[in-house]
Amino acid sequence: MADFRHETERLILRDWREEDWEPFWQVTNTPAVMEWLGGVCDDAKRQGAQDRLLGYQRDHGHTFWVIERKDDGAILGFCGLKRCNQQGGPLGEMEVGWRLREDAWGKGFAKEAAMASLDLAFDHFGAQQVVALTVKPNTASWGLMKRLGMTHRPNLDFENSDFGDDIIIVYSISREEWDAQRG
Image (cartoon, rainbow, N blue to C red):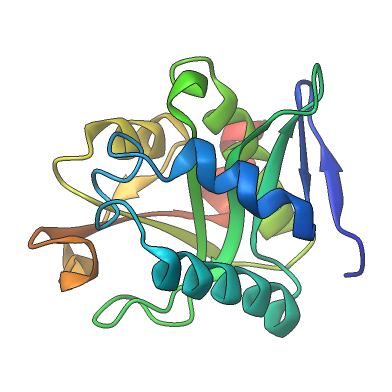
């Protein structure tokens, strides 16, 4: 999908532009935002993340897109879809994920972007199920997963040292469950 752009009430989810990277890293590569994501990234880790995000778009037609606030064009972080690639996890499953700057927390932006991403996963990309991953201490993240109607799947939880020593917990929602809650 060339030049992806999807609008919600307050947000724009869109493809990455070269000029997005510096402001994105300035507001998201902080100790608070990166606490459960392996810590603040050095230059090599930032470049690796950028390459992966662009690679997801190239290889699958979706990625964790830029979240731009409509009011002022500020980059709030990212949210979107990728194929699960975490060693030990549910490889290949459609995965929804998000990362928002600290001053955007608690305002419903992550939920708004994640709901739009789930709509796209099921309606545009044909997913039958979508998973989300986090670590157990990240209560804000799995709390949002629950508010999205996702269910913890302990049988899919796995160990992976990419984000510290914690077990990665897996939540999921099926197309039927998503459709039922949308009415």
